[in-house]
Image 1 (cartoon, one colour):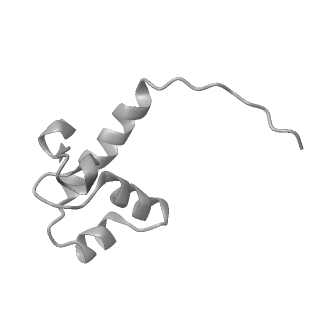
Image 2 (image 1 turned 90 degrees about the vertical axis):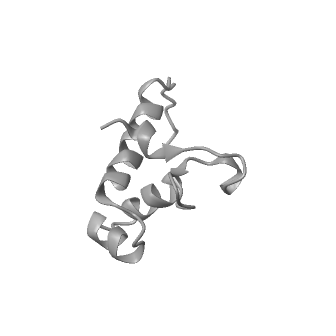
Amino acid sequence: MDWRERVVTDPDILLGKPTVKGTRLSVELILGWLGQGWTVDMLLENYPTLSRDDVLAALAFAADMLRDERYIAVHQAS
Protein backbone atom coordinates (compact mmCIF):
# COMPACT_ATOMS: atom_id res chain seq x y z
CA MET A 1 0.00 0.00 0.00
CA ASP A 2 1.19 3.48 -0.81
CA TRP A 3 0.31 5.70 2.14
CA ARG A 4 0.57 8.78 -0.12
CA GLU A 5 -2.88 7.96 -1.51
CA ARG A 6 -4.44 8.32 1.96
CA VAL A 7 -2.21 10.55 4.11
CA VAL A 8 -1.96 14.22 3.17
CA THR A 9 -0.81 17.52 4.61
CA ASP A 10 -2.62 20.80 4.19
CA PRO A 11 -1.50 23.95 6.03
CA ASP A 12 -5.18 24.85 6.50
CA ILE A 13 -6.01 21.60 8.31
CA LEU A 14 -4.54 20.98 11.77
CA LEU A 15 -1.66 23.36 11.00
CA GLY A 16 -0.34 21.02 8.31
CA LYS A 17 -0.10 17.88 10.42
CA PRO A 18 -0.39 14.68 8.37
CA THR A 19 -4.05 13.65 8.25
CA VAL A 20 -6.18 11.01 6.61
CA LYS A 21 -7.33 12.43 3.27
CA GLY A 22 -10.79 13.96 3.44
CA THR A 23 -10.84 14.06 7.24
CA ARG A 24 -9.45 16.05 10.14
CA LEU A 25 -8.09 12.86 11.72
CA SER A 26 -4.35 13.13 12.18
CA VAL A 27 -1.83 10.33 11.92
CA GLU A 28 -0.74 11.42 15.40
CA LEU A 29 -4.25 10.78 16.78
CA ILE A 30 -4.44 7.33 15.18
CA LEU A 31 -1.00 6.30 16.43
CA GLY A 32 -1.77 7.70 19.85
CA TRP A 33 -4.92 5.61 20.23
CA LEU A 34 -3.13 2.50 19.00
CA GLY A 35 -0.34 3.22 21.47
CA GLN A 36 -2.94 3.42 24.25
CA GLY A 37 -4.06 -0.11 23.39
CA TRP A 38 -7.00 0.59 21.10
CA THR A 39 -7.57 -1.97 18.38
CA VAL A 40 -8.21 -1.12 14.75
CA ASP A 41 -11.82 -2.20 15.28
CA MET A 42 -12.16 0.26 18.18
CA LEU A 43 -10.86 3.05 15.96
CA LEU A 44 -13.27 2.16 13.18
CA GLU A 45 -16.19 2.04 15.60
CA ASN A 46 -15.37 5.42 17.14
CA TYR A 47 -14.40 7.15 13.90
CA PRO A 48 -16.86 5.97 11.23
CA THR A 49 -15.17 8.00 8.47
CA LEU A 50 -12.00 5.99 9.00
CA SER A 51 -11.27 2.75 7.12
CA ARG A 52 -8.92 -0.12 7.90
CA ASP A 53 -6.78 0.99 4.94
CA ASP A 54 -6.58 4.49 6.43
CA VAL A 55 -5.18 3.04 9.67
CA LEU A 56 -2.69 0.92 7.75
CA ALA A 57 -1.66 3.99 5.75
CA ALA A 58 -1.04 5.91 8.98
CA LEU A 59 1.20 3.10 10.21
CA ALA A 60 3.03 2.92 6.87
CA PHE A 61 3.52 6.70 6.94
CA ALA A 62 5.02 6.53 10.43
CA ALA A 63 7.32 3.67 9.43
CA ASP A 64 8.55 5.60 6.40
CA MET A 65 9.19 8.73 8.45
CA LEU A 66 11.23 6.77 10.98
CA ARG A 67 13.10 4.69 8.44
CA ASP A 68 15.56 7.42 7.49
CA GLU A 69 15.92 8.99 10.93
CA ARG A 70 19.29 8.79 12.59
CA TYR A 71 19.52 8.17 16.28
CA ILE A 72 22.28 8.68 18.77
CA ALA A 73 22.39 6.23 21.64
CA VAL A 74 22.54 8.04 24.96
CA HIS A 75 23.20 6.06 28.09
CA GLN A 76 21.36 7.37 31.11
CA ALA A 77 22.92 7.15 34.53
CA SER A 78 21.11 4.82 36.94
